[in-house]
Length: 100
Ligand code: SF4
Ligand code: SF4
Image 1 (cartoon, rainbow, N blue to C red):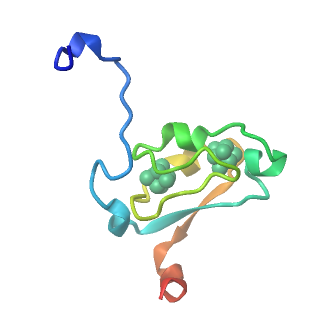
Image 2 (image 1 turned 135 degrees about the horizontal axis):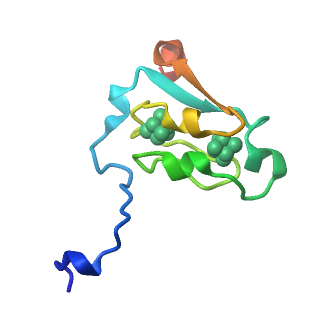
C-alpha cells in the first residue's frame, strides 16, 4: 500500500523545490561549457553524470543540459562529478550586474 515502506524502492531522488528555493543560498554558480560538455558536443543524449549526482535534481537531461538556478544551491557536486570538467563554479557576485 502507499504507506508501506516495503513497497517503495530503496532509491529515492529529490526533486526541484523539495528543499525550498535554495538558489539564494548560492555563493558559487555552476556554469556548463557547451564546448566541453559531452551531449552538447555530440548533439546527442549522453553522460548526464551531473544530472545523476545533483542532490536537488535541478539539472535537465537535455542538449545541452540546463541548470535551474532558482533551486541550485551551489554545492558543486555536479562540477566534481563531470568527467570532462565542463562545469565551472563561478563566483555568484560576478553575475550581479547581469541579473539586474
Ligand atoms: S557531467 Fe559534464 S559532460 Fe556530462 S552532461 Fe553534465 S556537464 Fe555535460
Ligand atoms: S551545484 Fe550542481 S549539484 Fe549542486 S545543486 Fe547546483 S546543479 Fe545541483
